[in-house]
Amino acid sequence: MSYTASDVKRLRELTAAGMMDCKNALEESGGDFDKAVEIIRVKGQKGVTKREGRTALNGLVSASVTGDTGVILELNCETDFVAKGERFQELGNEILAKLSTSAATELAAFLASDFGGGKTVQVHIDEANATLGEKIVLRRIGVLKNGPVSVYLHRTSPDLPAQVGVLVQLTKENAIGKDVAQHIAAFAPAYVKREDVPADLIESERRIAQETARNEGKPEASLAKVVEGRVTGFIKEVSLIEQAFAKDSKKSVAQVLEEAGTNVSAFFRFRVGQ
Image 1 (cartoon, rainbow, N blue to C red):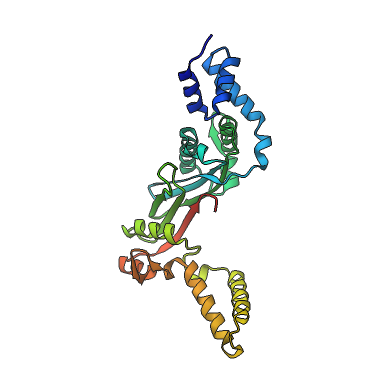
Image 2 (image 1 turned 135 degrees about the vertical axis):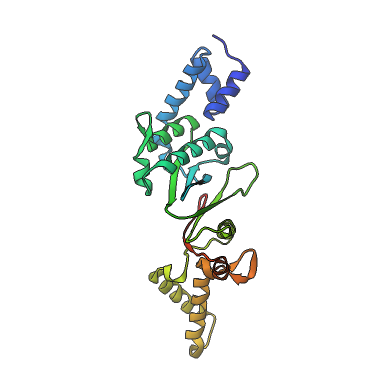
């Protein structure tokens, strides 16, 4: 049985395998397309263990909201070539759809959960690992339930899937949620409010500020004031509601939320590879 260039193209689009791998699989299968797919998957599966040590820093962020539940995930691969591919992006959609109906809220539990067809989510990812020929990793997930959730996805390049994603949950539904999600995407806060910043992180920042101020030759008499000023600046930088609002820098996020009659209860911000 022979094969054509269109068969190679179709096989490559379906599996995202290299051109020579597709040609070799078609030759080995005698032109039988379905058998060629199987050959690529089997050979790919044998390489899964070898790929474990590789770095997967490309990929996508995907998120969705259904009712009062929002889900977000980061799926990683090794190269932007695979990240741009249809199969990898389909995989992201498949996993996101499963996450949106799953009871799991932690990564390990979700990976071990049933994907369907008698396999776990992890096995489904491993199968994609085999066909795509790269290390594929579901790096993290986020779930927000029982409240109004807004979502924002941002493409850093037109030929790549979204690289930044945000889920933000408000205490009361308001259209401001989308603007706040965009703000979080741009300004990357780590916490909702200053009370959420861990005490050990503040102390670490205080030690760094003190050492820096001394190295700068600041007078000992004013050292404490300088250090506290820098620590306060750090807290404002990492606390969402204390940041200047992206769409109106004269107001803080807290002021904008107060005017809207709502507040932020939680958020997730994922950026590929960070």
